[in-house]
Amino acid sequence: MKLRKIVSKLTNPIFIPLRKLFVFTDKKIGTCDYRLALVHRETANHFFNCWHCGGEVIWGGDDEFEAYGIAAEGIVSNFSCTLCRATYECFLPLDEDSA
Image (tube, rainbow, N blue to C red; front, side, top):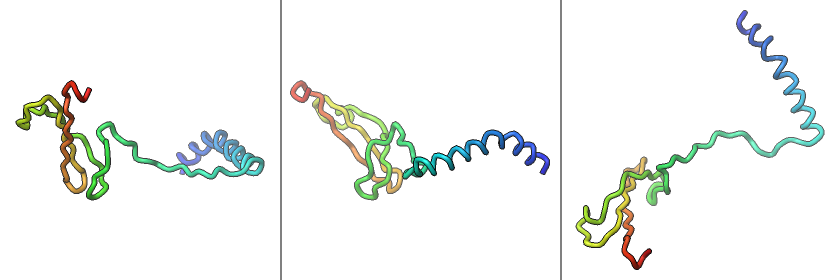
């Protein structure tokens, strides 16, 4: 209990006036319509949601067309779902006509 009293003596001078300020502004201006909520921050690897389950799809890596036996120039990007383990491969041709 002693620690609790020490903490309250340190924080009361800050939080009591702050609470009074909020009560005053609520009476004069009105309350805010928004709620404070924690929202998951999208990571750099999250590009789109899974077609099948709606889960988070993350990037797995890139390969060249050559790795897939394709004679043209291009990139194959690999993606996978974190929930249902669905996989996606996106093919991007890099020929002169598409640039």
